[in-house]
Length: 188
Image (cartoon, rainbow, N blue to C red; front, top):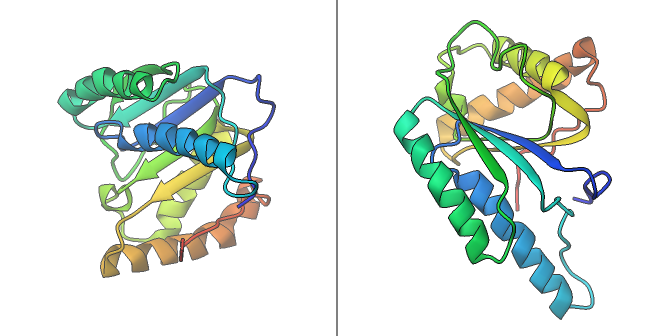
């Protein structure tokens, strides 16, 4: 969709909320490698977004055991792709109905990912969820950052995600995020 990474020399600082075994982190590493190879073999075609080869990921999940597995798997997977391994840090956190999604002391991130995360919220009001997300993004996203959010294509989750999208669009200005552009749902 035309997104290019801000200055390529800037190290990656990424967070994956609900990371499980690091699936999204591995998927992003694989996608970058695949688009590099495709670009080499095609006059035109998909291009990598230019993710830095150095940096770190904060993997957050409620299951400590699966996070321990991710710290071993993600670097091994990257090395199998011929990439430098990103530094992986893990944090155990259960997402509740109140309180911040990240602690105040958490840094700002340039890449934010979530997958299969809508069901983690026991809140049902899309406006309440949108407010929590927007406040967290306001506090913990760098300028020109990218959010990648993947949910299952199930009827209930899809409808909840579309309602959440509407709430995010309606409220983004109140949080100083008027430039936030949701490019969802992915219809391709």
